[in-house]
Each structure stands twice: as C-alpha cells, then as structure tokens.
Amino acid sequence: MLGRVNHIALAVPDLAGAAERYRSMLGASVTAPQALPEHGVTVVFVTLDNTKVELLEPLGEASPIAAFLAKNPAGGMHHICYEVEDIHAARDSLIAAGGRVLGDGNPKTGAHGKPVLFLHPKDFFGTLIELEQV
Image 1: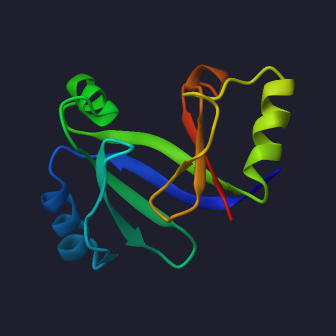
Image 2: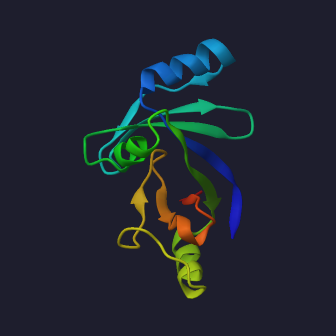
C-alpha cells in the first residue's frame, strides 16, 4: 500500500525564521509560503533530492498546529507523509484492519493539490501519519 516518503513535517513557531535558517545554515531550497485555510496552516517545503521537509506554522488560533506548539513551544516533528496509489482503497483497507482515519474519513486537498488523509497517531506508535495520493 505505501509508496515513498513524500515529506516529513515540522511544526515551527516562526515560519519565516525557520525557512531562513534552512536556507542560510543548510543551503536548502525553500518554496514560497502557501496558506492552507482548510488545514489551518501556512507551509513551505524544503526541497531535497529524495523527499521534502514541510515546515508548518499555525494559520489562526483554531489551528491544530497552534495546539501542538502550545505543548512544544520550540516546535518539533508533527507528521510523516507517505504516498499511496489509491487513497480511497488505502482508507478502506486501514479501516477494515481496525485503523482510524481522522476527521470525517473523506480526503481533503493537501498542499500539493492532491487528496490527503490523516491517520490516528495512537494507531502508529504516537506518530501522526498523512497519506497522499500520487
């Protein structure tokens, strides 16, 4: 079911500062900020040869990233995203195996314009999993 790692997401308290640190200290290529109101975040992507690092900043007080940063003020790893060929088939297979999909179970459009789902972290050793259809 799983394809390659699409990205690893880090919640950060200051998106511009984090993007600049990746540029200046690591020489990384960083995309322009993109607001995703449906997900309550603003994101940038650090582009690597084999994957991406997504830096997330809260977009509004109701953002799930705001709650994460309240518990982890310096930021930290938020989730890992895996690619799947068919997000509906992946969802159905996970539910049949006893897994939990967050939200209403229907895919939303992610930062790359593709369908995404999030899986309950308690089902995956405390790690929030995102699935993105390729």
